[in-house]
Image (cartoon, rainbow, N blue to C red):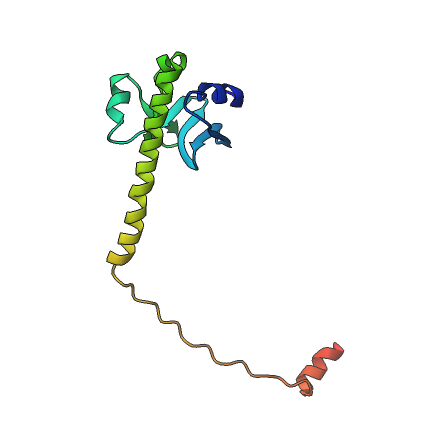
Length: 150
């Protein structure tokens, strides 16, 4: 999928920002990334509210292979192929993907602050104080000797 194809694909949804990412593109609206266009296909952001829709269509979550295992990313699901020909319905799926991405953003914010508030204070390691350095005056014989290079 190239940039022009993606711009046309999201025409009924509204303006999108398309940025190079991994082996494809990250697609965002209003600063929120909600889709990935990769070699493996087009993936929309999903959550517990929208995953059943993807499952009903027979879609699968995004997966990639590492040397050791296959990693499944449940927050991005493949867009059903039939939607590439249904621009109005694709726009609706894109809106629900954007909403899922926005819900995920909101969920992340409170967790960060609540963890800081709820976390136990950690003991700081005591670092021994360093002995103050002795000042060597410019008139010191050691210094003069070092300057001459002898």
